[in-house]
Image (cartoon, rainbow, N blue to C red; front, side, top):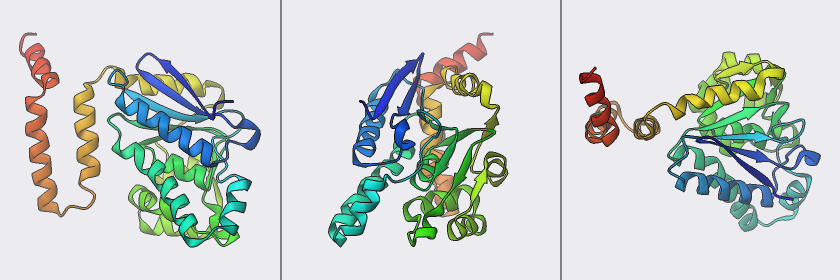
Amino acid sequence: MDEVLIEDRGAIRFLTLNRPEKRNALNDALVDALKTALGEAHENEELRAVVIRGAGKDFCSGADLSALQKIAGASYEDNLEDAHNLAELFAMPRKMRVPVIAAVHGRALAGGCGLATACDLVLATETAHFGYPEVKIGFVPAIVTAFLRRNIGEKRAFELITQGFEFAAQQALELGLVNRVFAEDQFDVEVENYCSVYEKLSPTAVSLTKDLLYGMDSLAFEESIELGTETNVEARMSEDCQTGIAKFLNK
């Protein structure tokens, strides 16, 4: 059985975590398969967006039991290698050319919530639940913290990762962790409609905008202005912008 199912709908690629019997829990095979699928999507210039979703009842329940057993008996070096592998997966969406969108139904917990948080955008059903419960077993949601504090701010992030409670989609929306909440019975249609917007936009402009937004992370204000200036010029010189201006002027 393939760990990740791949389906293209127009210029939108759907990547489905395919371990429904395990609530799509993350193990080495699933992490590696998802990294490969994301890498292939990044290289495909026909795509305009990528959606990550889960098969069965849940988006992703976190680490697989076998993965937790491996952590318990592994050396520091082995655990460091394993953590780096997960960190590489979480870092991939931000580095990709196109928007990467998590479509969350059921539960997104621990590493599964981390995966959703690492995506550019998050869509959820009304009944979806999120949580970073790692502290309850003496663990730390460490890698995702770099993303979470950028998404919702320090104080809100502190509460979620040190108390470990589950929270519903509406609260996730209010926190800024989720972009849109849709009805359960219309979720697939609403996700497709939401993502189809990117088929109508300039892929160059979307990619440049994404690079600019994340490129400002470690910059001072003046440096951010300079990066914005350089991106402005790069956009002006792009074929998409030249074509768009010509169409506008010839209306």
